Image 1 (cartoon, rainbow, N blue to C red):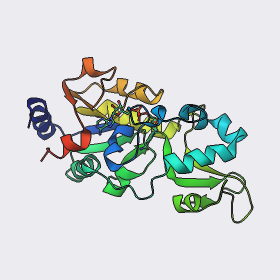
Image 2 (cartoon, rainbow, N blue to C red):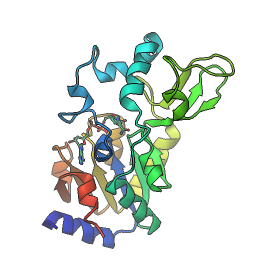
Image 3 (cartoon, protein in one colour):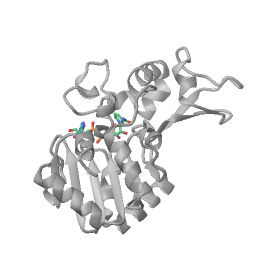
Image 4 (tube, rainbow, N blue to C red):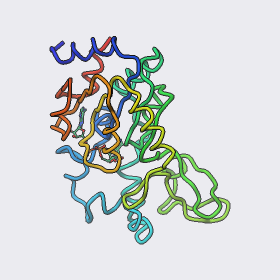
Length: 240
Ligand code: NAD
């Protein structure tokens, strides 16, 4: 175990209000590509950049193309939690970790057993008819042909995912701010910290240990008390 990981393990033992703030990099070891790594979605070739496709106006105006990309690239029905998701759930079970705040929409933290999961950008597991509000799970979207419509009223279905140009849920934001401002350790992991307003929420942290675990450098590396450059699943698998 390297020195920084040892420091991280010791700090976990000392802390009792740990909050995790993560992004797409948490799920790459589960086989879901992130946006900005070299094999991420930004470096694959599409007719439009991913942030254009997963935007509100694109969803409204080019619904068919939106769903083509969304089903192909954003849904991973067979993905399983990795060591990072599992360790975070275990730390919550032990009473050490109080919340996972995630920009991910894949539901893997809940699949690993985490309870207090604040999904800043929603979830692919929740989908609603825009006309009658009927709920649909991910399977309905996966097995639909083309644009999914409601089996009751024929209305267009929208994933409960925060698209570019859309606002964040105020209740999720206030719960996130509350947890982060009470935390004695904030672990930032697997995120480039470039998507706002989500990334700005970490400014509420005033606790003892700011930990950053990421493959690529982030804008908060310079503020970190513990900085680990590596794969987050591999790092967490070394923590007892
Ligand atoms: P990002 O793609 O901008 O950044 C991912 C970061 O994670 C990069 O800095 C990369 O170096 C790092 N990383 C990749 N694999 C890693 C690993 N195994 N261990 C440690 N670090 C690793 O992702 P972002 O900051 O979350 O922003 C992208 C947006 O896209 C988010 O808002 C999110 O909602 C969405 N998104 C979600 C998923 C998902 O739900 N799994 C996947 C792709 C994109």
